Amino acid sequence: MKILVTGGAGFIGSNFVYYLLKNHLEDTVVCLDDLTYAGNLSTLKEALENDRFTFVKGNIADRDLVDSLFDRERPDVVVNFAAESHVDRSILDPGLFLTTNVMGTQVMMDACRRYKTGRFHQVSTDEVYGDLPLDRPDLFFTEQTPIHASSPYSASKASADLLAGAYHRTYGLPVTISRCSNNYGPFHFPEKLIPLIITRALADETIPVYGTGENVRDWLYVEDHCSAIDLIIRKGTPGEVYNIGGHNERTNIDVVKTVLAELGKPESLITYVTDRPGHDMRYAIDPAKIGRELGWQPTTRFEEGIAKTVRWYLEHREWWEEIISGEYRNYYEKMYASR
Ligand code: NAD
Ligand code: TDX
Image (tube, rainbow, N blue to C red):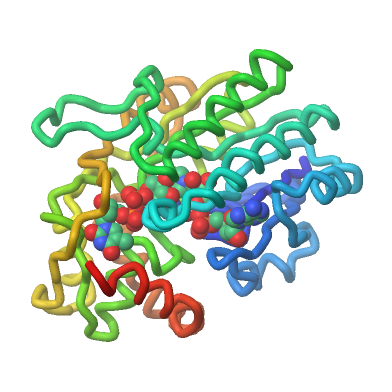
C-alpha cells in the first residue's frame, strides 16, 4: 500500500512514519507536512534515507497543492495527523486552528473523494468529549459519549470529526476516526507537559504547574497509539469511531514528581502558576471497543514509558536544544511571563 501521512514531521506523525517503515516492509510512505513551528525535518532524518519514504512540504489546506499531490501519488490510504495541537496556543489565537484542523481536513477529504482513496483516517483526540469530574472515577469516555469541547483546539478537532462523519454518511467516503488520550515519548515538542518538565528540569529551571496540579490525564506511550492506528487502517470498519487509551490516569502533579524522580531532580523546582482558562479536569478513555473488535492492547506501562522517554531526551539533546534555543524562547516568555 501507499500511505499518505500528513503531519509526519510532528510528534505522533513521525513516530507513525517510523512504525510503518519498520513493521510494513511492503508499504511505501509519503509525508505531507508544512513544517510549522511544531514540524521538524531533523525528526525525519532516518526516514529520508529510506527509499520507501518521500517527503513533501505543503499545507493540507492548500487545495491546488493537495490535488496535484494526489494526482502524482494516488495514495491507497490517508492518515491525517496534521493539526495545530497545543491547547494553550489555541486560547491565544484560535483562527489558525480552524484553518488547519477544520478546513485542512475538508481539503484532504475532498481529494480522497475525487481520487477514490480506499481509506481516510482522521486522528482525533479524547478532548472532543470535554471532561469528567474528579469525584466520579467510575465514569469513562466511550464512543457514545456526546461531543462537548472546552477549548478552541478541542472545538476545532470536534468540528473535523463531525465533518468526517458527514462525509461518510453523505458521500460514502470510507472514513475512520480514532480518539486517543494524551501521548508521550520521543520527538514530543517541548511545549507539552512531559517534555517541558524534562527539558526544564535538566537546566534546573522551574516547572510551571497550572492551578492545583490535580487535573487528571490518561497517558499512552506513543508507539501504542501508532499500533492502534495501524490496526484501524487495515482492519477497522469505515464509518466507525475507535477510542484509544491504556487506563493510565495520573494527576499532573504525580506526573511531574515521577519525571523529576526519574531525572534525579528536586521537587523544589515545582512552581504553581495561574490555571489554564477552561482547564479540563479529567480525561479517561474506555478502550474496550478497539480491544474487542480489533484485538488491540497497549504494551508499555507508564513507569517503563517514562523511563524510556527520559532516556531518549538524554540521548537526543541536540534535537530539543536546537528547538528551545530558537523562537521557542519568545513563546515561553509570552505564555508564562504573566502567569
Ligand atoms: P504536533 O504539533 O507535534 O505535530 C503537528 C504536525 O503537523 C507538525 O509536523 C506540523 O508541521 C504539521 N502541520 C501543522 N499544520 C499543518 C498544515 N496546515 N499543513 C501540513 N502540516 C501541518 O502534533 P501531535 O502531538 O503529533 O498530534 C498529531 C495529531 O494527533 C493531531 O491531529 C492531534 O490533534 C492528535 N492527537 C494528539 C495527542 C497528543 O497527546 N499529542 C493525543 C490525541 C490526538
Ligand atoms: O506548563 C504546563 N503546565 C501544566 O500544568 C503545561 C504545558 C501543561 N500543564 C497541564 C495542562 C494539562 O492538564 O498538564 C496537562 C497536560 O497539558 P498538555 O501537555 O498541554 O496537554 P493537553 O492539554 O492535555 O493536550 C494534549 O492531549 C490531547 C495534546 O497537546 C493534545 O494535542 C491532545 O489532543
